[in-house]
Image 1 (tube, helix red, strand yellow):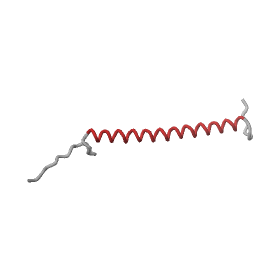
Image 2: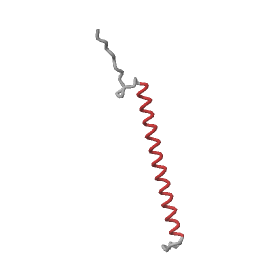
Image 3: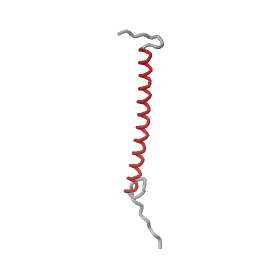
Image 4: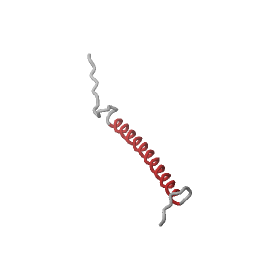
Length: 66
């Protein structure tokens, strides 16, 4: 197999395809991270609702003074 480094050769086209593939994979990674962050946020919000809307998970007790 012969690799030529002049413009317009197969090696140059291969580098362009590799770069494009790399860019697509990075974009997929970024979008995946954003989706994961949204799931984590939604999960934490749902957990807070189940545990009494208190960030530390403990219910507050209201005391009325007479």
